[in-house]
Image (cartoon, rainbow, N blue to C red; front, side, top):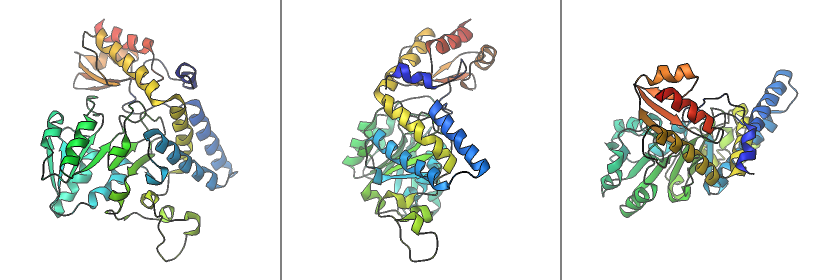
Length: 345
């Protein structure tokens, strides 16, 4: 699917530059969700059809990041999917994390400190050098939520492997616009409601087979069974042999919207989306006299930024005067220029 043609599937109001907070739905996702809500209201449909959307989503997500679908677990949030990874660390293990890390990829490690896990935080630019013989796991966001910096993925993985450490990656702010080889990590977590443009309440985890052997599915329910529809009642324990044992029952309407959303992203292709997004981000940066970068998320210091953007109808994140603008496939040059005029006029 050509990107220019696909962009007609979105109906944004001008000035939306905040996909790093949440993505906007394509028409197929919006329409599927509206249809499901109508069916729910009238009782016209069996819920199994909605549940099938979760499996479609799993398969499409796996294809997007280049891993087998059997190695993907589904859930609702990154922290929920990350919890059994953190719980599998032995007492005394050391985790290295960037110091300005989104808390969904920090708190799951910190809560393990009460049983002896050590968490060491370092500046992102020192992350590779901080991985040493005492490191058991390194956890980091592939793209930082705070400022859009892209982590040196290959260098981090190489350093971790050199010291026998596990690698856990939060790709929430990357997956959907930044191509990467997910299979090089041990765990890759993604909240799908940003760059994958799915409803909130959808999340995915690539869990490498060797890592899964260390983990215990403490949240196991019927959806974690080998045959979920045959596991509604009674013993014995009969969990899936693959990553589905770490599933929680899907938030059905969220996945009804997620399946077509991910299929649209896959149909366009992440490399084409990256080229579009980064070009717009660099148009924004150069318009403010800043050097171009390599991320779809950028931050700049501009006095009175919040008031200026609000008056112009531009929606971007602003923290203490620092603008965080994020650009996705439905963003346009006109959106960029609207923001630039507001910030420089």
